[in-house]
Amino acid sequence: MLDEFTPEESRASRREERRPRRGRRLLIALASLLALALVGVGGFAVFLNQKVSGNITREKLLPSAAPTEINGTPVPQTGVGQNYLVIGSDARPGESASRADVIVLVHVPADKKAVQLIHFPRDLYVDIPGRSKDKINASYAYGGAPLLVSTMQNLLGIKIDHVAKTDFEGFKNMTDAVGGVRVYAEEASSGGGNGGPYEIKQGWNDLNGDQALAFVRERYELSEGDISRGKRQQAFIKALMLKTLSPEVIANPITLTKFLDAATDNLVVDEKLTVGLMRSEAFSMRGLRSDDVVFITAPFSGYGTAPNGGSIDIVDEKQMAELGTRLRTDTMDDYADGRVTP
Image (cartoon, rainbow, N blue to C red; front, side):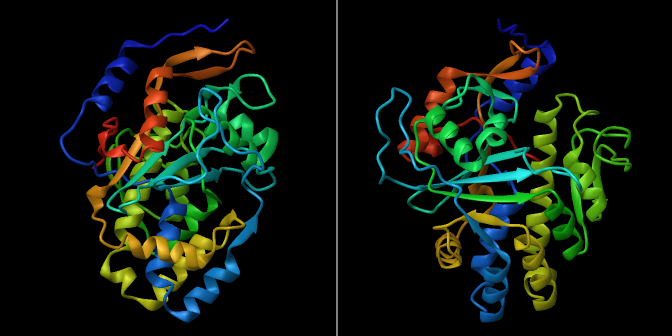
């Protein structure tokens, strides 16, 4: 039996986050997307193209079975826009990389005028094909990227076109490659949690690679656990993107090469996602402004307890169906559930 509850402060927080805002939102997510974009920006130089091609690994990350909509009917294999699933693993040295700690669906609309990045909390309680109901990141542990893709396709009633995987160690390496970043923290942490022995103050922080890794890992000392950690990851990637696109990095061949090397060293993509396709997609979006990149949290109605006693995030079925419809019909500009970070 599910025990659903929503603390007053959490409800207030979510109401604030879901308040409609005028215009698009300034929201950035996930280092892998940044890597793909910069392959397009810098990959026209032959030596960078060769380096990136040599770094990236390709695997069978997409399922064989065709996706179905929520009502069980097949999802059209051709449609509008492209959906990329970006997976991040937080496996530590000596651990098996079987956890999906970052799950973000990137929607690139057909007109290339915006990008929507949708974060799926890892504790979201969903139906997993061939399994009982469980947390969404359990699908990755059970069957790797193909099962996670199938789970999300069925949840949303959409087709996922491509997949990219990276790990948290890449965050550290990319940060050091650009000489550190300045990032805003909504909450402080003492360094006594699970992130690492680094104190983070509320407000602006200048972080090197080790400090950035601790910043994006921490959740035990944050008010909403994994949800708050997702907000930290968002703030960090925004800071990393701004630093990387600054003249001191983008116009410096040595620094840019170091960054691309770090960004793609642990990058795994599906067999059909070629460097040429990445470059073409990035080049087609070269006119994007920072406020054309939107970050959304997949809708959930509250917190609860699974039959096995684990804490879960309960899916907001109505809003999830709405999100799936907007993705499928390429009308994400009309989906207003997002938040702005400094």
